[in-house]
Amino acid sequence: MNKKLLALYGLKWNPFSQEVPVEALQRSSRIESFCWRVQQLVGEGGFALVSGSPGTGKSATLRVLAEQLSGVRDVQVGALSRPQARCEIKRIGSRIEFSLISRRQGSD
Image (cartoon, rainbow, N blue to C red; front, side):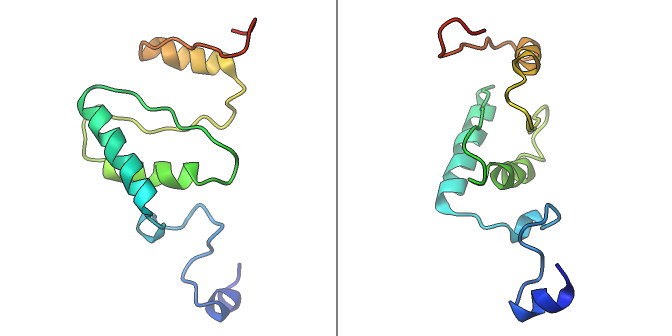
């Protein structure tokens, strides 16, 4: 998006770009509540999995969460771009000691 178009709409950043700074992302009460719950889980040694339909704000929310947890030791925030890759999820699960339980019969 060029600078003239950004200026026309009063924008500082392209809202569709991954380069939007974390501090410029909208932090709704739902996002703040989610981040608070994950911070509580982290304090107890927990694990969180975020899933949802495309375009619902998962990546932006994880960017906010990663920033908030940046000062906590031994915490990693990451994303799987292809959740269909069950073998990758299983490999990660074995490293952090959780097992994958499928809701579909006959799949593993």
